[in-house]
Each structure stands twice: as C-alpha cells, then as structure tokens.
Length: 91
Image 1: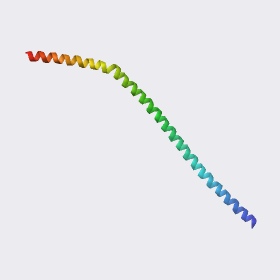
Image 2: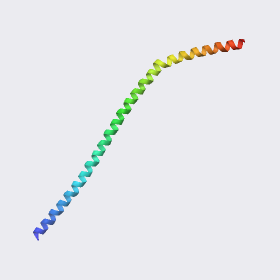
Image 3: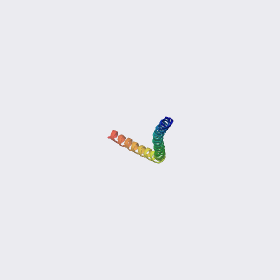
C-alpha cells in the first residue's frame, strides 16, 4: 500500500515536471520569436535611418547646387521671353 502510494506520488511528480517542461519550452520558443522580431525591427530602423541620411544629403545637393543653376536658367528664360514679347509688340 505504501509502495503504491509512493508510485502514485512519483507519477504525480513526473507529470508535474512534464507540465513544467512543456510550459518552459513554450516560453523559450515564444521568447526566441520575440527576440527575432526585436532584431528585425532594429535592422529596419537602421535601414530607415541610413535611407533618411541619404535623402537628406541628396536634398542638400539639390538645394545647394542645382537650385541656384535652375534659378539662373529661369532668369535667362524670363529675360528672353520679355525681349521676344517686346519685339512682338513693336511689330
């Protein structure tokens, strides 16, 4: 009888150990997925920051280099337009 009780207690303890192992394994796999998601998000943030820097540099190039040239071209074209318009009104 005491042997049977010991076997029951042992089986109960083994069952509890198995339950704890399974829940621990689920937690570990869930934790690994969470870590992978965090790493993926960190990588996405890094890429976004690099792209932002690249775009900011391109904006500076356009602002500093191309806009003045385009403004000069605009002034030339407007001057040509005025000259042609004046010549046309004289005719």
